[in-house]
Image (cartoon, rainbow, N blue to C red; front, top):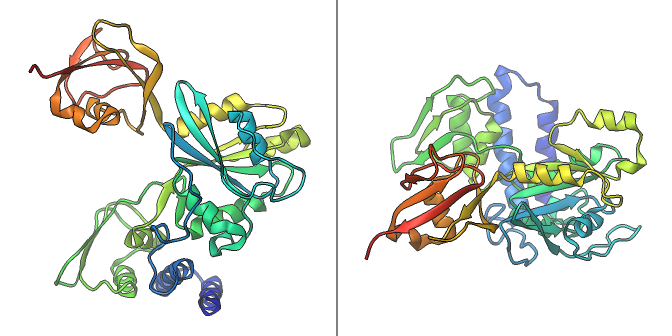
Length: 374
C-alpha cells in the first residue's frame, strides 16, 4: 500500500508543477486517469472493487428507518452529539474532549409529518479515506445518507471544511453536484466513437477521451457528451460508482464569535449558523434540511372519510412527482389494480379533479386512489 501511496504523491506533485493550458490537456488527462485508478486501488486493494461497492470499507450497521436519512460529519469535538440530542432527544455522549463518540448513534426526529433519521458519526481526521481513525467506516455510512450535514466549529479555521471535502471526494462522494450528462456505451468492435452535443471548454476533446478510455482498458465504445464537462467528471462516469449527495454546512457554536465574524461566514453558500447548546436558529436548519432533501407531503384520503393529515406520504423529487410514483411509494403492486385518482390541492384545476397515473402532484395535495372494479 505504501508503494501505491508513493505513486499517488508522485503524480500529484507532477500535476502541481504542470502548467494548465491547451498543450498540456492531454498530459494532465493521462495523469488524472492514472490517479483515479491508483486511489481506487488504495481504497479497495489491488484488483479490488471500486470505492462504494459492497466490499469497499464496510460502514456501521445501522438499519435505515423513517422517510429520509441525514448524517452528521465533522472533526472531533465540534458539537455533533449535542446537535443530535437537541434535534432528536436521543442521548449521545458529549464531553469537552475529542473522540467522545466512537460508533454511529442513530436518532429520529419529526418535521412536517416526516420521520427523519439522524446519524451521529464519529469525528473524522485528515487521511480518513485511507482508513485513519475509522474514517472509511464513517464515510461509507455517509454514502447511504440522503443529505450530509458537515458540522464545523465557527471559532476554528475554515481549513477544516476543505479537509473534510477532500476526504469525501477521495471516497467517491461528489457534494452538491448532479451526475454529468455523459453517455458511454461499450461495444464489441468499432473503436472509439466520440460526439460533442455542446462545445467543450473545460479540457475535454476526442484525444483526451481516447487516452482516458485507454487507461481504463476500454478500446471500443460510443461516447456522447451532452454538456460541457471536465476530465474529472468524465472519469467519474467511467468509474460509475460516485455518490452525488447534497451537503449543508452547519456552523456550530456561533455563541463564541462576534457579529463581524458571522457576517463573513454569511457569504458562504449552503450554510446555516446555529448554536446547538443554546438552541439558536434550529428552525432555519430544519427548513434547509427539508428543502435540500426535496421532500413533499401527500395526504391520503380513504373513500368516505376525512384525509389523514397526521401521517403524510413523503416523496423525494426535484420536480413534481406523478400519481404513479405516489402509488409505488405506498406499495409496488398498487398500480396493477389502479383505475384513477381523485386529487384535491394546488395541482388540481378544480376540487376534486379526476386524474390518471401521469398527473403531477404538488406539496400538501390530498389523493384518493380508486381501484379497478372486480
